[in-house]
Length: 160
Image (cartoon, rainbow, N blue to C red; front, side, top):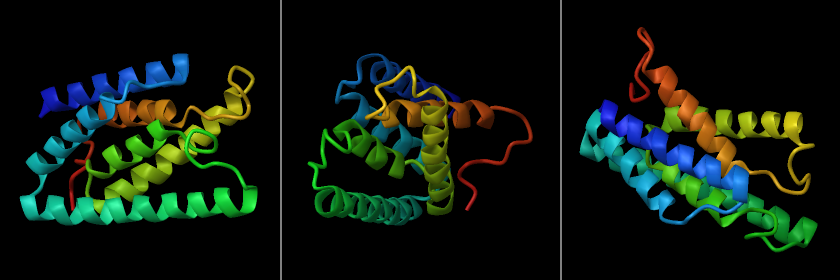
């Protein structure tokens, strides 16, 4: 379990570094992260629970992305992918959705989005103010969550 968590931290570190430094992430990191998070989820819950939670999380992410797409397309009249929202961000959302039970996922997902927004607002002078390195900042949030999960007396992320 610890080894899988360390691999997740390494994958998220690579995503964060590439997104913050180059604003592009090698696509293979997202399926790797999805597999690692899925493996952690399966080892900590039962198979049928993993399927149910993952399907629910994927539906939630799809709903959020549909709302973002409709807002972008009809209200701002911009292209969605790679103009308003990066493909790496989309892939990270889906990889992230496979990693946790639904309640934990929603709390972490909202926390990651709020963390990304706060960090971007605080440091926007270093970045292009038109784009947010969302995948990178969410990667840093996930790293932090997994490091904190190593501390004693911290409840498991997979308690249902």
